[in-house]
Length: 233
Image (cartoon, rainbow, N blue to C red; front, side, top):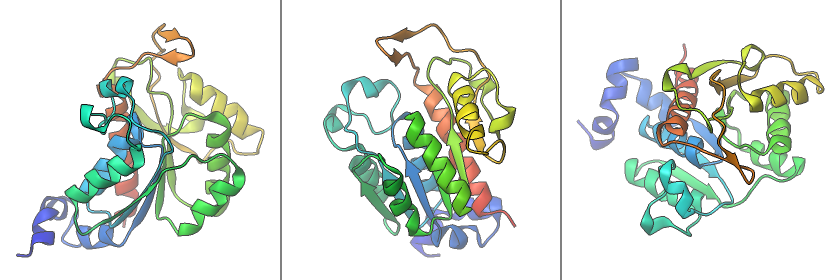
């Protein structure tokens, strides 16, 4: 029994003997590797996906320590994508984990990154104009994806769901996204992770309160969508 087989043997036991070999040749993009995206990326790496591209232009801040898997005293000030790429490489030495220390700012930026023939994309950003354009291009390109809605201000893990954007409720971000995408002719076919729980009144100076487990759960749901899609028969 070789080491690579041992590393992902539990995945094969669950999904079938060829699961790890299928995932080993897949390529996934995670856009935004903070609270939600960081957990999504790690779970995708732990499933044995061969290539994971991590895109985020931010650095680790001390305020990230309450919810982001990459936020440690030792990583404060470092590039998030770079920290997570190194962490994923420790999980799967045979994988390829590319750090893109940048933000998506223009439609051209999105077009360029999507030329990499992704099998799945995880959208874990909260910049609404960029999020809308990313989804528009993903839909146009036919690339499978999942989009995370708002995890901030929520405290009940039992309410987290995965559903089409058209079926969401109780999420301010999802409401805005429905309107923006509808104006582009996109009213369905956008898989999302969301919670119908009404947000806590925790806004201050354009920031919103958060708790450790909620972004993690959102990220796990995103990873589940990616993995299950890539292993679907």
